Amino acid sequence: MSKHIAVIYGGKSSEHDISCISAANIMKKLDREKYEVHAIGITKEGSWRYLGPVPDPELVDEIANDEAIEACEARVAVSMDRESRGFIVRQDAATRLVNVDVWFPVLHGKNGEDGTIQGLFEMSGIPYVGCGVLASSGGMDKVSTKLFADKVGVTQARFIADVMKDGSTIHETIERVEKELGYPVFVKPSNAGSSKGVTKAHNREELVEAIRVAKENDHRILIEEFIDGREVECAVLGGERPEASCVGEIKSAAEFYDFDAKYNNAESKTVVDPDDLPEEAKEAVREDAVKVFKTLDGFGLARVDFFVRRSDNQVIFNEINTMPGFTGISMYPMLWEAMGVDVTELLTRLIEMAEDRWKPGVTEV
Image (tube, rainbow, N blue to C red; front, side, top):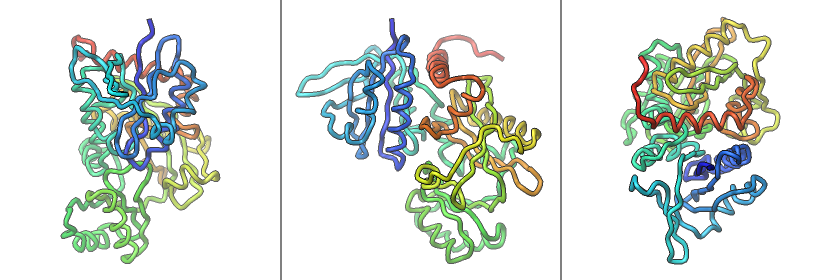
């Protein structure tokens, strides 16, 4: 008997459209002999819509887009009754329960990989793909991630955080940046995905503007020293004994790999297992990727990003993404493909891990 997988996509974050593309690719690649796929789209305003069972992968592109989600009239509410495992669909004054065996959230950014929806799934009592509440919230918040990584001795860029809502510490923060870090620096919202709100500042005037832009996305911001390095990524997969993939390199067409360079500039490229990257650096990336993943209590999947400094090949941790993209240019599935794990097998393993996590038993020591 096929298991029911509810793929959830869209959402209120700035990565709504990317989420739809990722979800479409996932629904196309899920093993239809094992799984019955249900599509739940969330509008940019936060309304949950049931776009129905998707028996034919060829139909995915018709439903996994913003226009289709907005046009759908069937509303969704997750059942919190653990005896009613699934979600309630309301349409034309009628309601019905759709059973779910595993939730598969394909939501990037806020309300998707920050622990909020993971908490909802925990309350529902139904297994879900990906990291839990702690890893999701800690991994999404860049300031918190830095503190976790610092405690386990992972090398990272020097940083200063400004977390005040009222702006009372901005002047002090600017003085600290100029004294402790120097220019240029990167200014980032602590909670935002796909490099949204990230700016490179070369002087005080640019720093002031960069702080303003970052705080429009989140009052908690992170300011990091500039690292002249190659941008590399590593995919992590697993539970208590996670595995690391080979290393991939980002060759950005812009000054840094921001949202536009990632998704809108065809000149940006990705290279899997680059030959000219020293093996010692690759191994250090793999080791630190697993270390950060485990420190945050990661589960299922994550993409961990690093710099390899050009002057001495020092590996420097950048950030972790607990729900990486599954678009046609996304590094996470690409790296596992290079390791001999195709996307269908990868998705099956993620679903099976989600189910195993909820089985009763004694944790291995």
